[in-house]
Length: 251
Image 1 (cartoon, one colour):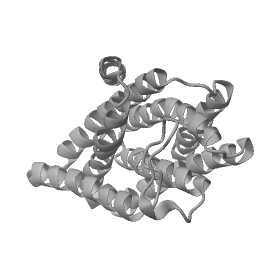
Image 2 (tube, one colour; image 1 turned 135 degrees about the horizontal axis):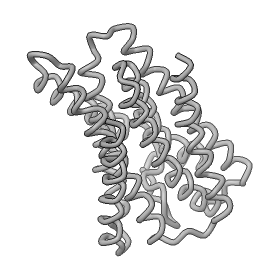
Image 3 (cartoon, one colour; image 1 turned 90 degrees about the vertical axis):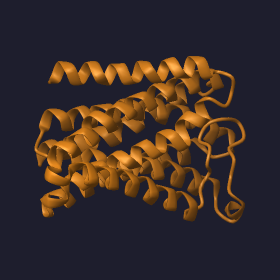
């Protein structure tokens, strides 16, 4: 349990570390943000496949493939529903984030925090679920991958928040809240699996599905929208390769 708590704090704290870099480097170009977010997407992709989906198949037993596929789609659909019903700023980077039509009455701070939370909560759950599997090395790989991608993600959101007129104090508090949300998600995932270990294969696939949804629906389109798609593609491959090498060395 101590390791889970420390990991949860590390995963959540990585967002804060990234935000500190964001305050230092306020003016981040689209090209740079696209490349670092693509690297983060590659890390997430490898973490989802190697640390969640493949273990789901391993633990699924006789009906492993059915459980895993069902879990992936359930996770993606759940995040899709949340994405539609919760008002938020849809694009996290860029000078003019795109907002849904129902957002006018809500503060910009709340919209930014909600958008980041939609990403961070399932990431935290994924880290917690992986610890519930009992495979500590694989769980640490997942947590490390999520923390690694949280740093650039935390970094590139600071500039747009400041440009949107949010004060530095509120911007930092918002980053802190999103880190806490990831800590909460980690604990939810861990305790859910430990209370009902029978759901482990489905929970692993569900967490993997949410991460795949974020990568495909949010990160890749955003990083390929500003003319840096070639660099973004190679950055994604680099992120994936880093996690692949880490998994090989830990294995």
